Image (cartoon, rainbow, N blue to C red; front, side):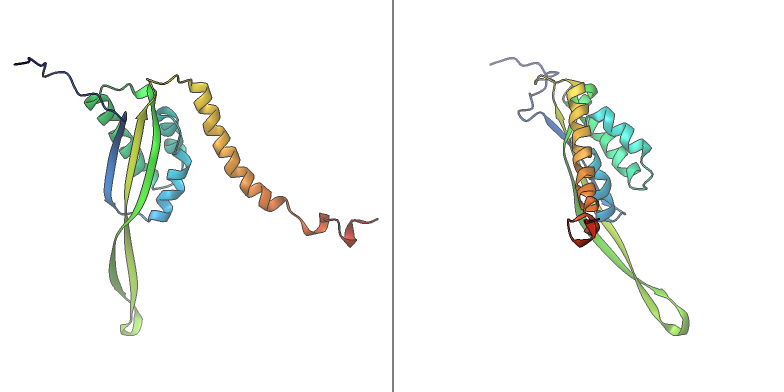
Amino acid sequence: MRKTNSYRRKKNPYREVYALGQHISLSAHKARRVIDQIRGCSYEQTLMILELMPYRVCYPILKLVYSAAANASHNWDFKKTSLVISKAEVSKGTTVKKLKPRARGRGYPIKRTACHIRIVLKDTSWYEYDETKEYLLCLKKMNEKKKKHEDMTDYSMYNSGGLWDKK
């Protein structure tokens, strides 16, 4: 019979840890607006981004990121400095429909939406990882998002080479 140590943990083949928040009373659309900003960033950058954003959604997401990092450090002995958000998903939850009484006996419908948020952290300590590269990659992604919006606004009908450009 083989003797095993009970304090040793199994190695995670995927090196990923997640935290799931269910029935969070927020709109899924509003949560996705924030989740898109933090996807692919490191753990420390994510904390800074979420603490500085002015949205109400940021606090539940911040709690989930803290929880996922605590799961990683406690269950798998990962270092918090080597964690990166590999996946961040928001799915639509239940909708509670109510009627609000209004004047003349009418009722207006009110929808209370909920969503489910899943944050997946990946350990990058096995890979060659440079924080400056990760920071530059995160900045590059943010600049690409800005460029999409700038490309749409750069086009002007007056500078299209038509009749009005001639002097």
